[in-house]
Image (cartoon, rainbow, N blue to C red; front, top):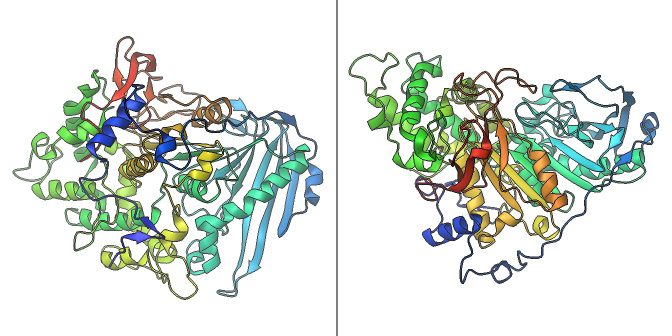
Length: 591
């Protein structure tokens, strides 16, 4: 049986129909409060929570500095740390969005090298830091994605077409492999300590070392420290918000897979559903072809495009669309063979099941529902659903998240009930379950973050094919309820209509989340909106080929703090300034 609690907290995700609901009263209060409307008799945070919402600490701004040491950092001394490279990188060696990245110092090394007594392999936490000559006084932990296993270039890049990365903004940036190499990915999950390093301990190990290295390089430690990442990097960030909030001042999580073990099991479950209607058993994409996804997306646009007050090829009010759109009514049912102009009754049933969320054989929830969004047309959505679900997720569930670890030979035949149980199990040397070492231990208890003046921004695309924005919204609902509907004083959640996993899709996916976070942490400017831009033809940060040709190449839209949505007011329909953030026309919550 799947337990109902993990480490004293409710499991992530919600049953269908509860995915984005609060009580009617709580939801109304929160929406009115976010809209800036005073509520008579509303309880104060001081009454609602041991620490009042008003008068939270304001952190001071970082003070710029200059690099004092580089090559001499080869002799940097810190416990269990080996430096292998310390060299100057000239300006222009790296570029981003057509601009040169300035001169900086590259430091590479590793920590905690050991020969495992469990499998005899050598493990260590590999890292690199890039230290700009012109320093902002800030440190950034670049949390990387997937199963980690490689040290990505430490530039501080997280989202689509980021016009300025963290290094260009003057951050000292750290990147790591989270304790294993790519060659070890098929096996590291069998090694108990490597599991824990990947889950959370590598971040805890690297953070004090990075701050000490910065102090040696600049003559002082960082004034402000940030952690940011997308996908698994978003998970790292959300885990850090619960485990390491005393070490970081700002947290930016993009498309966070904070319930990653659940999502991975759900992916395998989804593959089994798609297999029921695939015309080619060896190609799950034949279960829901590109033409058929285009058909459903067009029906969504036809029914929901105008809900935000403007017909512009975008659905900005996702909540209301879920309430009024019916795939049975809006999409023709095939009388004969499938030809891209209809869906079979069996297809419609499978699509409904997949979007409602994975369940065990007795109906117990495994993972969250997903919103049905026009962004399902993107190639990335299909890749996550039809390819990753049978190639990557079985490896992750079997060897990393499940206990005891074991290879999954045939994902289409695996017992989903057993797989769902395995991510909550412990055994022998595996003293923490997958759900314990991979997820925030108390995701709705952010007292440390809050009380020291730290802030968090979470961003998620509504057409994410692997991690559900419904799950993220449910987490925010629970967090907001725990803080009596004043969580927006230290955490804000933004959805990007049409955006896929981390980036892409028919969406305005170019945004400066890091800049918004700095302004909130250091200047007290809470983000009432974040302007996001499409990456059409000529975009300096790289073109998103999934931006429709009917849009202006630089179309902009405001991302609104959940649960508000963007609604057209007046003016140029291609400009974010023509929109305001208001409550969803369908009320709060997705059913």
